[in-house]
Length: 372
Image (cartoon, rainbow, N blue to C red; front, side):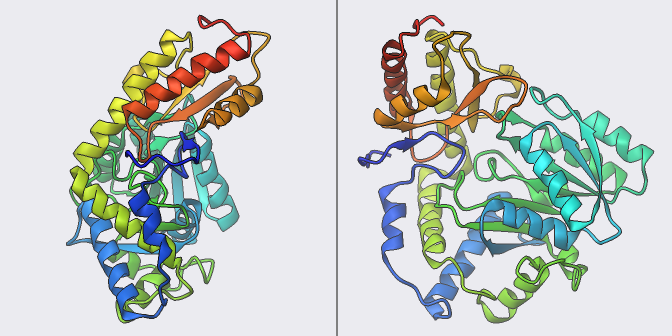
Protein backbone atom coordinates (compact mmCIF):
# COMPACT_ATOMS: atom_id res chain seq x y z
CA UNK A 1 0.00 0.00 0.00
CA UNK A 2 3.04 2.28 0.14
CA UNK A 3 4.23 1.62 -3.42
CA UNK A 4 2.70 4.77 -4.92
CA UNK A 5 3.35 5.27 -8.62
CA UNK A 6 2.84 8.25 -10.93
CA UNK A 7 -0.35 6.59 -12.16
CA UNK A 8 -3.57 8.02 -10.70
CA UNK A 9 -5.19 6.23 -7.79
CA UNK A 10 -8.32 4.40 -8.97
CA UNK A 11 -11.12 5.12 -6.51
CA UNK A 12 -13.60 3.02 -8.49
CA UNK A 13 -15.39 -0.32 -8.06
CA UNK A 14 -12.87 -1.95 -10.39
CA UNK A 15 -10.40 -1.99 -12.02
CA UNK A 16 -8.58 -1.04 -8.86
CA UNK A 17 -5.26 0.35 -7.77
CA UNK A 18 -3.07 -2.72 -7.30
CA UNK A 19 0.17 -3.29 -5.42
CA UNK A 20 3.60 -3.32 -7.04
CA UNK A 21 3.89 -7.00 -6.12
CA UNK A 22 0.71 -7.80 -8.04
CA UNK A 23 1.79 -5.81 -11.09
CA UNK A 24 5.26 -7.34 -11.04
CA UNK A 25 3.74 -10.82 -11.19
CA UNK A 26 2.64 -10.04 -14.74
CA UNK A 27 6.20 -9.53 -16.01
CA UNK A 28 6.67 -13.27 -16.57
CA UNK A 29 5.30 -15.13 -19.58
CA UNK A 30 3.57 -18.49 -19.03
CA UNK A 31 2.83 -21.37 -21.33
CA UNK A 32 -0.87 -22.13 -21.18
CA UNK A 33 -0.33 -25.92 -21.17
CA UNK A 34 2.81 -25.82 -19.06
CA UNK A 35 2.81 -27.82 -15.84
CA UNK A 36 3.84 -24.79 -13.77
CA UNK A 37 0.88 -22.77 -15.03
CA UNK A 38 -1.50 -25.69 -14.45
CA UNK A 39 -0.24 -25.90 -10.87
CA UNK A 40 -0.77 -22.14 -10.48
CA UNK A 41 -4.35 -22.52 -11.72
CA UNK A 42 -5.04 -25.38 -9.31
CA UNK A 43 -3.67 -23.44 -6.34
CA UNK A 44 -5.67 -20.36 -7.30
CA UNK A 45 -8.88 -22.41 -7.52
CA UNK A 46 -8.34 -23.90 -4.06
CA UNK A 47 -7.52 -20.56 -2.47
CA UNK A 48 -10.55 -18.81 -3.97
CA UNK A 49 -12.76 -21.61 -2.69
CA UNK A 50 -11.21 -21.24 0.77
CA UNK A 51 -12.46 -17.63 0.94
CA UNK A 52 -16.10 -18.77 1.03
CA UNK A 53 -15.78 -22.30 2.42
CA UNK A 54 -17.61 -25.25 0.94
CA UNK A 55 -14.56 -27.34 0.03
CA UNK A 56 -16.57 -30.53 0.58
CA UNK A 57 -19.53 -29.44 -1.57
CA UNK A 58 -18.39 -26.77 -4.05
CA UNK A 59 -15.69 -26.17 -6.63
CA UNK A 60 -14.16 -23.09 -8.25
CA UNK A 61 -14.46 -22.72 -12.02
CA UNK A 62 -12.50 -19.81 -13.54
CA UNK A 63 -13.73 -18.24 -16.79
CA UNK A 64 -11.97 -15.95 -19.22
CA UNK A 65 -13.47 -12.47 -19.45
CA UNK A 66 -15.00 -9.92 -17.13
CA UNK A 67 -17.25 -10.68 -14.20
CA UNK A 68 -20.33 -10.32 -16.41
CA UNK A 69 -19.04 -13.19 -18.56
CA UNK A 70 -19.00 -15.37 -15.45
CA UNK A 71 -22.48 -14.24 -14.39
CA UNK A 72 -23.83 -15.21 -17.80
CA UNK A 73 -21.97 -18.52 -17.69
CA UNK A 74 -23.48 -19.33 -14.29
CA UNK A 75 -27.04 -18.41 -15.28
CA UNK A 76 -26.83 -20.09 -18.67
CA UNK A 77 -25.40 -23.31 -17.25
CA UNK A 78 -27.02 -23.72 -13.84
CA UNK A 79 -30.54 -22.57 -14.70
CA UNK A 80 -32.34 -25.12 -16.92
CA UNK A 81 -34.18 -23.91 -20.02
CA UNK A 82 -37.51 -24.29 -18.20
CA UNK A 83 -36.18 -22.68 -15.05
CA UNK A 84 -37.73 -19.54 -13.56
CA UNK A 85 -35.48 -17.02 -11.81
CA UNK A 86 -36.58 -14.47 -9.22
CA UNK A 87 -34.42 -11.34 -9.34
CA UNK A 88 -34.71 -8.80 -6.50
CA UNK A 89 -33.95 -5.56 -8.34
CA UNK A 90 -32.58 -2.54 -6.51
CA UNK A 91 -30.00 -1.32 -8.98
CA UNK A 92 -28.05 -1.41 -12.23
CA UNK A 93 -26.36 -4.77 -11.73
CA UNK A 94 -29.63 -6.45 -10.79
CA UNK A 95 -31.07 -5.03 -13.99
CA UNK A 96 -28.13 -6.50 -15.88
CA UNK A 97 -29.01 -9.97 -14.58
CA UNK A 98 -32.56 -9.49 -15.86
CA UNK A 99 -31.19 -8.52 -19.26
CA UNK A 100 -28.92 -11.59 -19.34
CA UNK A 101 -31.87 -13.84 -18.53
CA UNK A 102 -33.91 -12.30 -21.35
CA UNK A 103 -31.07 -12.91 -23.82
CA UNK A 104 -30.72 -16.49 -22.56
CA UNK A 105 -34.42 -17.14 -22.92
CA UNK A 106 -34.77 -17.98 -19.23
CA UNK A 107 -37.97 -16.83 -17.56
CA UNK A 108 -37.44 -14.12 -14.96
CA UNK A 109 -39.59 -12.72 -12.16
CA UNK A 110 -38.56 -9.21 -11.20
CA UNK A 111 -39.26 -8.06 -7.64
CA UNK A 112 -38.48 -4.31 -7.59
CA UNK A 113 -37.08 -2.43 -4.62
CA UNK A 114 -36.04 1.17 -4.15
CA UNK A 115 -32.52 1.76 -5.46
CA UNK A 116 -31.59 3.63 -2.28
CA UNK A 117 -32.48 0.75 0.04
CA UNK A 118 -31.75 -2.95 0.46
CA UNK A 119 -33.69 -5.96 -0.71
CA UNK A 120 -36.28 -7.17 1.80
CA UNK A 121 -35.83 -10.91 2.41
CA UNK A 122 -39.39 -11.26 3.68
CA UNK A 123 -40.75 -9.87 0.41
CA UNK A 124 -38.53 -12.29 -1.52
CA UNK A 125 -39.76 -15.22 0.54
CA UNK A 126 -43.40 -14.20 0.07
CA UNK A 127 -42.84 -14.16 -3.70
CA UNK A 128 -41.37 -17.66 -3.51
CA UNK A 129 -44.37 -18.89 -1.57
CA UNK A 130 -46.76 -17.38 -4.11
CA UNK A 131 -45.00 -18.87 -7.12
CA UNK A 132 -43.87 -22.50 -6.76
CA UNK A 133 -42.59 -22.44 -10.34
CA UNK A 134 -39.61 -20.32 -9.30
CA UNK A 135 -36.52 -22.55 -9.31
CA UNK A 136 -33.75 -20.02 -8.57
CA UNK A 137 -33.11 -16.65 -6.96
CA UNK A 138 -30.35 -14.43 -8.39
CA UNK A 139 -29.19 -11.87 -5.81
CA UNK A 140 -26.63 -9.09 -6.12
CA UNK A 141 -24.86 -9.01 -2.75
CA UNK A 142 -23.44 -5.50 -3.01
CA UNK A 143 -25.18 -3.31 -5.58
CA UNK A 144 -22.28 -1.12 -6.63
CA UNK A 145 -24.53 1.17 -8.66
CA UNK A 146 -25.20 2.82 -5.30
CA UNK A 147 -23.07 0.95 -2.76
CA UNK A 148 -26.05 -0.58 -0.97
CA UNK A 149 -25.45 -3.88 0.83
CA UNK A 150 -28.19 -6.48 0.38
CA UNK A 151 -29.05 -8.99 3.15
CA UNK A 152 -27.45 -12.11 1.70
CA UNK A 153 -27.76 -14.22 4.84
CA UNK A 154 -31.48 -13.51 5.25
CA UNK A 155 -32.19 -14.18 1.57
CA UNK A 156 -30.17 -17.40 1.70
CA UNK A 157 -32.20 -18.54 4.70
CA UNK A 158 -35.44 -17.75 2.86
CA UNK A 159 -34.31 -19.74 -0.18
CA UNK A 160 -33.33 -22.67 2.03
CA UNK A 161 -36.73 -22.68 3.77
CA UNK A 162 -38.53 -22.65 0.42
CA UNK A 163 -36.24 -25.17 -1.27
CA UNK A 164 -34.99 -22.84 -4.03
CA UNK A 165 -31.47 -22.50 -5.40
CA UNK A 166 -29.59 -19.24 -4.79
CA UNK A 167 -27.06 -17.76 -7.22
CA UNK A 168 -25.15 -14.78 -5.79
CA UNK A 169 -23.45 -12.04 -7.76
CA UNK A 170 -20.69 -11.30 -5.24
CA UNK A 171 -18.63 -9.29 -7.67
CA UNK A 172 -17.92 -6.45 -5.25
CA UNK A 173 -18.16 -8.34 -1.97
CA UNK A 174 -16.11 -11.50 -2.49
CA UNK A 175 -13.11 -11.41 -0.16
CA UNK A 176 -14.31 -8.39 1.82
CA UNK A 177 -17.68 -9.48 3.25
CA UNK A 178 -18.45 -12.87 4.83
CA UNK A 179 -20.00 -15.59 2.65
CA UNK A 180 -20.15 -19.26 3.57
CA UNK A 181 -21.51 -21.25 0.65
CA UNK A 182 -21.60 -24.52 2.56
CA UNK A 183 -23.29 -23.29 5.72
CA UNK A 184 -25.82 -21.13 3.88
CA UNK A 185 -26.73 -23.60 1.15
CA UNK A 186 -25.78 -21.27 -1.70
CA UNK A 187 -25.72 -22.96 -5.09
CA UNK A 188 -23.23 -20.58 -6.68
CA UNK A 189 -21.23 -17.42 -6.01
CA UNK A 190 -19.88 -15.39 -8.92
CA UNK A 191 -16.99 -12.92 -8.65
CA UNK A 192 -13.98 -11.64 -10.57
CA UNK A 193 -10.25 -11.10 -10.33
CA UNK A 194 -10.22 -7.30 -10.34
CA UNK A 195 -12.21 -6.59 -7.20
CA UNK A 196 -11.64 -7.12 -3.47
CA UNK A 197 -8.90 -9.74 -3.84
CA UNK A 198 -7.09 -6.85 -5.58
CA UNK A 199 -5.98 -8.59 -8.73
CA UNK A 200 -6.32 -7.17 -12.24
CA UNK A 201 -9.41 -7.51 -14.46
CA UNK A 202 -9.77 -10.21 -17.09
CA UNK A 203 -11.00 -13.31 -15.27
CA UNK A 204 -14.29 -14.19 -13.62
CA UNK A 205 -14.97 -17.27 -11.55
CA UNK A 206 -17.93 -19.24 -10.29
CA UNK A 207 -17.88 -21.19 -7.04
CA UNK A 208 -20.62 -23.71 -7.65
CA UNK A 209 -22.09 -26.72 -5.92
CA UNK A 210 -20.69 -29.84 -7.57
CA UNK A 211 -24.06 -31.58 -7.73
CA UNK A 212 -25.51 -28.56 -9.56
CA UNK A 213 -22.68 -28.67 -12.09
CA UNK A 214 -23.08 -32.41 -12.58
CA UNK A 215 -26.75 -31.88 -13.44
CA UNK A 216 -25.92 -29.18 -15.99
CA UNK A 217 -24.26 -31.20 -18.74
CA UNK A 218 -25.35 -30.05 -22.18
CA UNK A 219 -27.45 -27.20 -20.81
CA UNK A 220 -25.36 -24.14 -21.67
CA UNK A 221 -26.42 -21.83 -24.46
CA UNK A 222 -22.82 -21.14 -25.46
CA UNK A 223 -19.66 -23.10 -26.14
CA UNK A 224 -17.27 -20.58 -24.60
CA UNK A 225 -19.53 -19.86 -21.60
CA UNK A 226 -20.30 -23.50 -20.80
CA UNK A 227 -19.45 -23.65 -17.12
CA UNK A 228 -19.96 -27.42 -16.97
CA UNK A 229 -17.60 -28.08 -19.86
CA UNK A 230 -14.96 -25.72 -18.43
CA UNK A 231 -15.16 -27.52 -15.08
CA UNK A 232 -14.94 -31.03 -16.53
CA UNK A 233 -11.95 -30.08 -18.71
CA UNK A 234 -10.12 -28.50 -15.77
CA UNK A 235 -10.83 -31.52 -13.61
CA UNK A 236 -9.69 -33.98 -16.27
CA UNK A 237 -6.60 -32.18 -17.62
CA UNK A 238 -5.70 -29.39 -15.21
CA UNK A 239 -5.86 -27.04 -18.19
CA UNK A 240 -8.26 -24.38 -19.44
CA UNK A 241 -10.28 -25.33 -22.53
CA UNK A 242 -9.22 -22.24 -24.47
CA UNK A 243 -6.30 -19.82 -24.15
CA UNK A 244 -6.28 -18.63 -20.52
CA UNK A 245 -5.49 -15.09 -19.34
CA UNK A 246 -2.11 -16.22 -18.04
CA UNK A 247 -0.88 -12.86 -16.77
CA UNK A 248 -4.19 -12.19 -15.02
CA UNK A 249 -3.98 -15.56 -13.27
CA UNK A 250 -0.41 -14.85 -12.18
CA UNK A 251 -1.44 -11.45 -10.80
CA UNK A 252 -4.39 -12.98 -8.94
CA UNK A 253 -2.14 -15.67 -7.45
CA UNK A 254 0.17 -12.94 -6.16
CA UNK A 255 -2.81 -10.98 -4.83
CA UNK A 256 -4.06 -14.05 -2.97
CA UNK A 257 -0.69 -14.39 -1.23
CA UNK A 258 -0.95 -10.77 -0.10
CA UNK A 259 -4.55 -11.32 0.95
CA UNK A 260 -3.50 -14.06 3.35
CA UNK A 261 -0.50 -12.05 4.57
CA UNK A 262 -2.76 -9.12 5.41
CA UNK A 263 -4.99 -11.37 7.52
CA UNK A 264 -7.64 -12.54 5.06
CA UNK A 265 -11.21 -11.36 5.07
CA UNK A 266 -11.35 -9.78 8.56
CA UNK A 267 -8.35 -7.57 7.86
CA UNK A 268 -9.43 -6.70 4.32
CA UNK A 269 -12.90 -5.79 5.55
CA UNK A 270 -11.50 -3.66 8.39
CA UNK A 271 -9.26 -1.70 6.01
CA UNK A 272 -12.11 -1.03 3.60
CA UNK A 273 -14.41 0.00 6.44
CA UNK A 274 -11.76 2.42 7.72
CA UNK A 275 -11.44 3.84 4.20
CA UNK A 276 -15.21 4.26 3.95
CA UNK A 277 -15.52 5.93 7.35
CA UNK A 278 -12.71 8.37 6.60
CA UNK A 279 -14.21 9.10 3.19
CA UNK A 280 -17.73 9.75 4.45
CA UNK A 281 -16.56 11.92 7.35
CA UNK A 282 -14.24 13.96 5.15
CA UNK A 283 -16.76 14.48 2.35
CA UNK A 284 -19.45 15.45 4.85
CA UNK A 285 -17.07 18.06 6.25
CA UNK A 286 -16.75 19.46 2.72
CA UNK A 287 -20.52 19.64 2.38
CA UNK A 288 -21.24 16.50 0.36
CA UNK A 289 -24.19 14.31 1.30
CA UNK A 290 -24.03 10.49 0.98
CA UNK A 291 -26.95 8.98 -0.87
CA UNK A 292 -27.50 6.00 1.43
CA UNK A 293 -28.41 5.53 5.05
CA UNK A 294 -25.31 4.39 7.01
CA UNK A 295 -27.13 1.18 8.00
CA UNK A 296 -27.06 -0.12 4.42
CA UNK A 297 -23.85 1.50 3.21
CA UNK A 298 -21.28 -1.10 2.15
CA UNK A 299 -17.52 -0.58 2.62
CA UNK A 300 -17.04 -0.98 -1.15
CA UNK A 301 -18.11 2.28 -2.77
CA UNK A 302 -19.95 5.39 -1.58
CA UNK A 303 -22.41 7.36 -3.70
CA UNK A 304 -22.67 11.10 -3.07
CA UNK A 305 -25.37 13.47 -4.21
CA UNK A 306 -24.10 16.05 -6.67
CA UNK A 307 -24.04 19.59 -5.27
CA UNK A 308 -27.02 21.81 -5.96
CA UNK A 309 -24.79 24.52 -7.36
CA UNK A 310 -24.99 26.08 -10.84
CA UNK A 311 -21.22 25.78 -11.18
CA UNK A 312 -21.14 22.02 -10.61
CA UNK A 313 -20.25 19.78 -13.52
CA UNK A 314 -19.08 16.27 -12.71
CA UNK A 315 -16.99 16.13 -15.88
CA UNK A 316 -15.11 19.25 -14.78
CA UNK A 317 -14.71 17.89 -11.24
CA UNK A 318 -13.51 14.55 -12.61
CA UNK A 319 -10.84 16.05 -14.87
CA UNK A 320 -9.51 18.33 -12.13
CA UNK A 321 -9.37 15.42 -9.66
CA UNK A 322 -7.63 13.24 -12.20
CA UNK A 323 -5.02 15.94 -12.75
CA UNK A 324 -4.42 15.78 -9.00
CA UNK A 325 -3.93 12.01 -9.16
CA UNK A 326 -7.35 10.51 -8.37
CA UNK A 327 -9.84 8.80 -10.68
CA UNK A 328 -13.46 8.84 -9.44
CA UNK A 329 -16.60 7.30 -10.91
CA UNK A 330 -19.81 8.81 -12.30
CA UNK A 331 -23.17 7.89 -10.82
CA UNK A 332 -25.41 5.14 -12.23
CA UNK A 333 -28.76 6.44 -11.00
CA UNK A 334 -31.22 7.92 -13.43
CA UNK A 335 -33.47 9.93 -11.14
CA UNK A 336 -30.84 11.41 -8.82
CA UNK A 337 -27.66 13.19 -9.94
CA UNK A 338 -24.78 11.44 -8.15
CA UNK A 339 -21.15 10.40 -8.35
CA UNK A 340 -19.25 7.58 -6.67
CA UNK A 341 -15.95 7.11 -4.83
CA UNK A 342 -14.56 3.64 -4.18
CA UNK A 343 -13.06 2.42 -0.93
CA UNK A 344 -11.37 -0.74 -2.25
CA UNK A 345 -8.03 -1.60 -3.82
CA UNK A 346 -4.48 -1.36 -2.51
CA UNK A 347 -5.18 1.88 -0.65
CA UNK A 348 -5.54 2.95 2.97
CA UNK A 349 -6.81 5.94 4.91
CA UNK A 350 -3.69 7.96 4.06
CA UNK A 351 -4.76 7.81 0.41
CA UNK A 352 -8.31 8.80 1.36
CA UNK A 353 -7.07 11.82 3.31
CA UNK A 354 -4.86 12.88 0.39
CA UNK A 355 -7.88 12.58 -1.89
CA UNK A 356 -9.94 14.77 0.43
CA UNK A 357 -7.28 17.48 0.27
CA UNK A 358 -7.51 17.25 -3.52
CA UNK A 359 -11.31 17.55 -3.37
CA UNK A 360 -11.12 20.72 -1.29
CA UNK A 361 -8.58 22.22 -3.67
CA UNK A 362 -10.68 21.25 -6.68
CA UNK A 363 -13.81 22.83 -5.20
CA UNK A 364 -11.88 26.03 -4.69
CA UNK A 365 -10.72 26.00 -8.32
CA UNK A 366 -14.29 25.42 -9.50
CA UNK A 367 -15.42 28.43 -7.43
CA UNK A 368 -17.70 26.18 -5.42
CA UNK A 369 -18.10 26.74 -1.70
CA UNK A 370 -16.46 24.22 0.60
CA UNK A 371 -19.86 24.18 2.33
CA UNK A 372 -21.96 23.10 -0.62
